[in-house]
Amino acid sequence: MALIEIKDLHARVGEREILKGIDLTVNPGEVHAIMGPNGSGKSTLAQVLAGRELYQVTGGGVIYMGKDLLAMAPEDRAREGIFLAFQYPVEIPGVSNMYFLKAALNTTRRHQGLPELDAMDFLNLVREKMKLMDMEQTLLNRSVNTGFSGGEKKRNEIFQMAVLEPRLAILDETDSGLDIDALRIVAGGVNALRGPERSMIVVTHYQRLLNYIVPDFVHVLSEGRIVKSGGKELALQLEESGYAGLGIEDEEEAVGKA
Amino acid sequence: MTAVAEQIGQWLEAFTKQPKAEPWIQELREAAFRRFTELGFPTTHDEEWRFTNVARVVGQGHALPSLPDALPIPPPEAQAYLAKHADFQKNAFVALNTAFLNGIHFTRVPSGKVVQQPIEVSYIGRQGMALPHRTLIVVGANAHCTIVETYKGAGSYFTNAVTEIVVGDSAVVDHYKIQEESREAFHIATMQATLGRSANFTSHSISIGGALVRNDANVTLSEGTEATLNGLYIVNGKQHVDNHTQIDHAKPHGTSHEVYKGILDGKASAVFNGRIIVRKDAQKTDSKQTNKNLVLSDDAVIDTKPELQILADDVRCTHGATIGQLDAEALFYLQSRGIGKSQARDVLTYAFAQDIIDRVKVPALKDHLEKVLFEKFHERTE
Image 1 (cartoon, chains in turn yellow, cyan):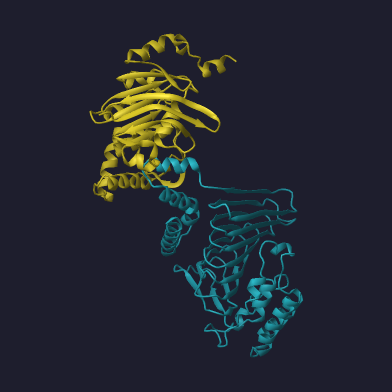
Image 2 (cartoon, rainbow over the protein chains, first blue to last red):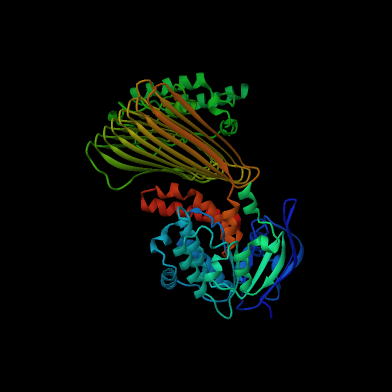
């Protein structure tokens, strides 16, 4: 059975229609890359799947583990194993990373009928995962993402993912703003989490990330629709010919020329 | 107008029935009562009371306690300080409090003494009572102390409190005022701190209870004095809290930092009026004021106003005020990690108040406040 089945999904923000009929099926263990120029709807898709209220779903549906995903609150989606690694992780002054992560993990464990972790077990788990991401332990006592560098924020996202062990991880432009060393660490963290029961949707503008996180499938999104799907070689083809090679206008490049 | 005259009439009766005190106290009472009758209770036409209508406070007919208060009457050594700092010429409630001067809480910290344990001043309100609480703290030069003033009670009553704090040169004083009055209580209070040269004074004002609350917190700085004013007010239902602060830089090289934060929910209302005076002589003053408000409902109202009177030319004064809601992005971020919406709201609301609570240096008090806040935000979203 498919882990997630997206059918003819339409979504808008305000009056602007962004997703114009997305179809995508992800089976357990598969890694799907969604590529596309800026403004194509990649991030919108990621946010809609996580339940951001800003976007209004106007048509189509999403079945996740046999359930109607769109009827679920964002927190219930997370408890059922959906994890969104944010493109722009949010700074929350006054809430410690430790408190935040412990609350998140235990609420999810409760939901799954598992016992909550006590302070000691939690700390052991967290230490192990921090090592994986090459993170300083002091980050735990700091407020969530507050004053973190861009790289630290992205690492913190993957670190949270490692602790929460989702069934479906959605990575939204996780490579943006990372230098090559940080990218290697982040990709290493992601790859360590790959497994037969865990699926991923990796949203990215550039092919670069896919050298490190090799996808099983690549989809190209343009103007709210998937216009081309293929294997990992499609990403390489895009690298060579650009989006223009597929007849897609890249807003960012167009803006760059203006 | 007649209603107000009637109110004063009630107090006149109480005043004349009051047993006479020692001459110096009796003189103070009479001067203050005279001034009170001249001033009358303020109305919303008074700029200082524009957003706080005291008609419902004075219309309740609360009675003064008939038994003498358990606190001792002021000793002769208090004479040099009592009513010399909190000015009853300008404020009718200070005048009223002074007119009914009786037992007071008086603490004197000798010069050079370091008092480790917090000095606790606790006032309890009782149903139907008008309570003219009076506190006088005199701290000698180079002394260190912490004062924790708490207000609690049950039922409907009227707390009319005046606190005078006199801080000697180079002394270090931390003052906490924890206002947790009953939800039917009226609380009108003035804290006046007069600070010596190079003294370091911190005021923490936490206002949680009460139906109608007015806190006046006034500090007067001397040369090289450092004053910090931290404030937190949390209101919901139909609560009203009005914080008026005045920081008077009377002499050069003074520093003042003020941060007041408010959390408003339901149909509550709050006022923040932060006056900073920099006198002509007070060159090299460094003053910073911040007021931040978190408004959780559509019906809550906040009026915030800085009031800068700067007469010196070589000074640095900054001020800023914000009014905002819970950050939708942060809320979604927490939810996207499995934290329920109501818990996420609690967490963010608590986080807003966190830095003020973090500045509380008395561990037991900090624990208490953390618990009270946690329960408060929890109950709100249940």
